[in-house]
Image 1: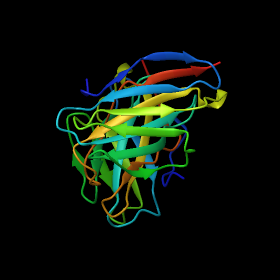
Image 2: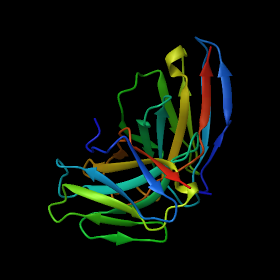
Image 3: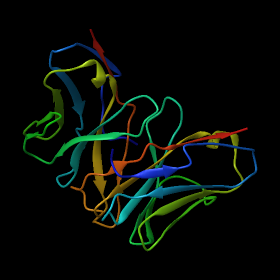
Image 4: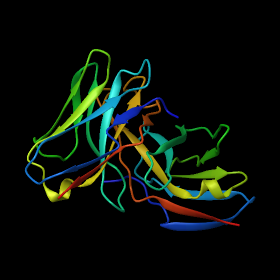
Length: 113
Length: 114
């Protein structure tokens, strides 16, 4: 079962920041938070990941709360091409032998013109 | 472009048949995972291969099997196809199996079982 909870859908105006929340209250100390997005019928696209500290790259910023029980993905200036399903994932690591991405149902972000 | 390529892109099979899907991982990546995505659902983990060995499996029956080759490319085989096997099959490659290594997905193979 997914270890994350996300709202099923959100709207955002083009050019504005999109803030996508995620709850992961049962996360363990060595588990990373990953964000992927999936545009209709394409493979998921990696966005960003983090453990404890906030992270930023050319696509987005990831803000993780101090207790690590929730996080927020920020797309600073949303465009129509950012319309997609966004998945927040806790990457489960079984002592290094296996790790897998457990996808939930994600948040459908609709960027409006 | 992630450098992960899957073939074929689309496939139609009859119930009871067998199918082989292929994945070429990104250069230098030694870990490949396979996922099944039914319509309207998130991807579900099938199994993972690390250096030619299966080292993790999701809740899928034994008729789902795989291989990883010395060049780290991979195959997913499904025997005795059922209608519910209709889905988008995704492979993802990563540099290794560590928890802080991002996985990159291919575009998937759309399998339809009739």
